[in-house]
Image 1 (tube, rainbow, N blue to C red):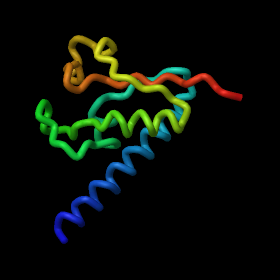
Image 2 (cartoon, rainbow, N blue to C red):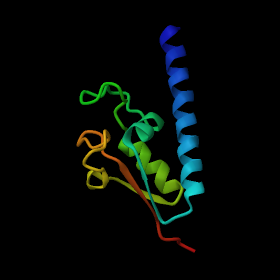
Image 3 (cartoon, rainbow, N blue to C red):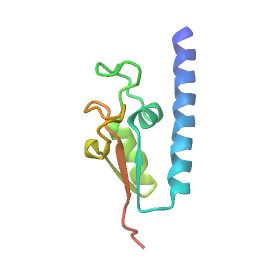
Length: 105
């Protein structure tokens, strides 16, 4: 019962992070956006533990890409976009670059 409650809480938290990401991308209005790994990993956590940064969940990139594609975005890790002095500059938790997919209309 306890594990089920924790899973339900984790799923609700992930959905809240996904909603926040969706709103941020919609409000951004540009053709490209950058998001930090911890924010996106909280929205799309893997069921596996993160051996590189235990304070953050491991990102489920497959789920993220599916979600992004459904919303008209292409997403990829972008370690080259992290400032050298940023706490987010880590090869195991790079920022994520979102770019609008061409419209099919």
